[in-house]
Length: 321
Image (cartoon, rainbow, N blue to C red; front, side, top):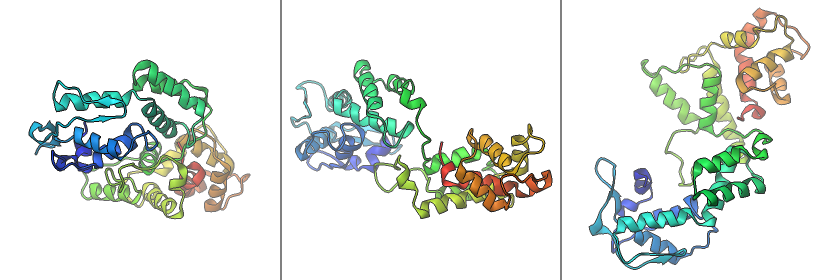
């Protein structure tokens, strides 16, 4: 039981005689059977009753408070409170019951496939994961192995990065270094995270950041990513220590006289493990003024290095993993 979840969803205030339904509603809708999982308002009230007294203490650790627990008989989604045991045991028993329901398997496996494979995952992939879930008693490791071993995983198109993933991937792939012990750097780093829309625990609704590209492709969200990318690759901004010349040198080490197109390709392979897309090539040409067949000298490449890296990272076709 997550103390943060109990606090965020007001279960810390739910007690016998004064139940709060927020945690129960989101437990069913988001984390187990899903919005179409076959429950109604009476079920939500019963679940909320079952979890009265599940709280956190002053150290933010989970505690069960028997005196605040409502011991009323409850029955929901095929589960009935036993006549023996205590409220803590009953809650755990119900959670285990929820984990084995087919609707929970369908809902959670779909979310996992959407997160790691595709915005609209193949039904056969989800069904394979659901079958593994049922066969293993909801063993998540086994479910993930079945997902990774499915043909749809190997053939999946790139997934659009959520802001936090994009930020971490970009810093790592550029060999950026973030020294939060330097004066002012931690404040600046938090600003970069905030501006990218990736501050932890700040999503305004309990469903969390979306896992589909359409949610992040509006002009405002793309502009925020571009601003963050500029801060990472700009040598004049020391929030993230980054040497574009070093990166360009690593990427081009095996190519003595590359064309402009090869420069962009090499940088894209270094940053994204794949040749540049048509959009990245177009962006590279736009920021450098080079035609694809031009052969810039090493000084020209060095001068344009930050812009080339920015073009590869910032083109929408490159904001994927």
